[in-house]
Length: 211
Picture 1 (cartoon, rainbow, N blue to C red):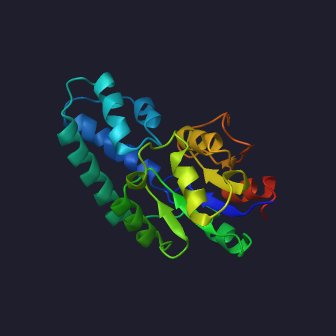
Picture 2 (cartoon, rainbow, N blue to C red):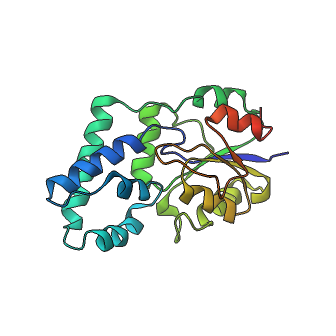
C-alpha cells in the first residue's frame, strides 16, 4: 500500500509546540507588544522566515530581531529545563510500522534546530533522510519539502504516508500528492487537507492501514 513513511517533527513526534507558543507569548509581552494566544496558534507549522511578514502585519512596531532572540532563548531554555518529550504513540508507531518501509523527516525547523531536537528526543537514528526548511526554496505549505523527501527515498509521493499535526504541514503533504494522516496538536482541525484525521498517532496509523 505504501512505499515510505514521512513524518513532521514539531507537534507530531516531539512535544515542542506548547513550549514554542509559551516562549512566544512571553517574548511579545517582554517587548511591550502582547498578543492573544490565538495569534500564536496561527503561526504553528509556519517556518521562521515566513512568520516575519505575518508578525509584522499583526504588530507593525515590534522589533523582529529582538523578538526572534527572546523567543529562541525562551524556547531553548524550556527545552533544556523541561526536556523534550515524545508525543503519545511515537515509540510504538516506530516499532510497529513495517520495518522495510524507509522513513524520512520533513520539518519546517532549520537544519541545526531539527537535529538538536532529534538528538534530545532520542530520534536521531530513526530516519534515512531529514529534510529541513534549509533544504528547499519554498517551505510548507508548498509541496516542495515532501516532494524532496520522496525524491531522496526514490519513491512516488502518491505512495508516501505522511503524519502531520498542523494545517500548514497537512496542506504541503496533500499538495505533494501524499496520503495524509493529521493528528492535531495545540490547534484543533477539521482535517481539510487530511485523508485521515485522528486523535493520536496510533489511531491514525490504524485508520491508514499501516498497522
